[in-house]
Image 1: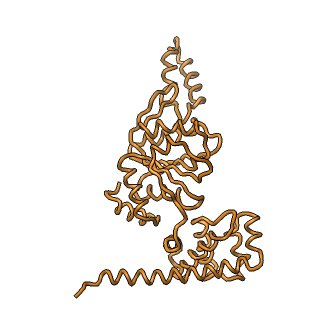
Image 2: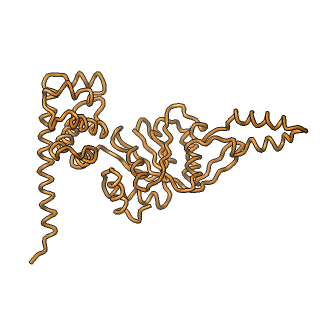
Image 3: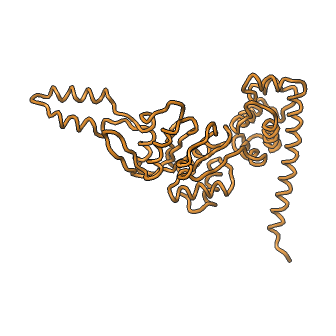
Length: 319
């Protein structure tokens, strides 16, 4: 674990996640005082990637519980291996003599016959891991309540098996696309961060990380295109990963800049619903988005130059 927020920020950047000191500080403090981090924001803004990047930065394993409607405790915590239990009972009954059924019952109710789910596996790690509970807004309040024991006292109460205490306390991240409001008890136990799509400068840096061979101008154009598309009335605005796909496609096709004549090539990468496809095929729609992307790219270039000049001025020693 890093020793300060600034080290955490540098570690995340080295893992390919570009963020700000506010986010790095929350991650650092949550790790130090054993609090989960609740990440809310639009789909594709980088919530899941933040948890994955923390695991990469710390050099630890990532365990993931993907939530969905109808998920139950067995999927999250684990369940007994009935086949293994039955096989053990059968073998013990054939060993000769009168079986000690009370002893057999105790043994098949033990940890050796229990298949751990992500939650139990996370707290049984010898070395601290990152636990990602993804899209928690898809579960009901009963499932939320089950999580409170884990996130409060770092134990899990399992029928027949008993109470399991954490060997190590995981670094927990909860993500939500805000499909429903999460309960206050869960919020009270968590640090809260809103993860939004990055600004154009940061997105250009992210694209540069994924496509280092492309030119700086191309990175800026992709960031400008992302800003232009997200400002348009799309049902499904592009995520960071989708813009990275566009950048890699441009690199493979040896395109430095998207032009109106590239419409049919690029549409499958950015229009992910029939409604959005029709919107972008409307007269001048794609063309106007490309023009705005170019203007945004020019603005990014100006701000980069201005920022560099300020940095140089700040390093100058007054005479």
